[in-house]
Image (cartoon, rainbow, N blue to C red):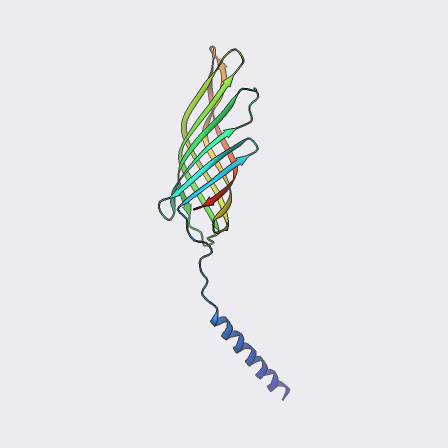
Length: 179
């Protein structure tokens, strides 16, 4: 008798839980898609602004402008611009966006040694990769790294010149507003 009551109670509870599970609505995508993102990026040596436009589901263009702060002389400054064609890796988890990009990097270095000053400018090939986390429908945080063929400046022949090429790696934290 005890076994029969236990079996009937188990069957009643199991069927009621099954009915509740069947009544749950289908799970919707976590966040809506977006076409434009505007944001800021920074690390201890630089700060900048960025914009992104998605023209296909997995492809977009990213533009960024950066001001650099780690110069030794008081009147020196540098900055740059980045334009990347970006491919977003399709992932099952829609809260995580991973992407890789390839494009052009513009560099500006203003030098000032007291008695002479000038600007060095360079346009070169660059790339980037990163991961963003969408934490709400309109905002995301990320860590992205720019890889570029940069230059090292040196004073030669009465003027500042690019004396050699070097690989530039610039990791940055990003915060974007999704529109």
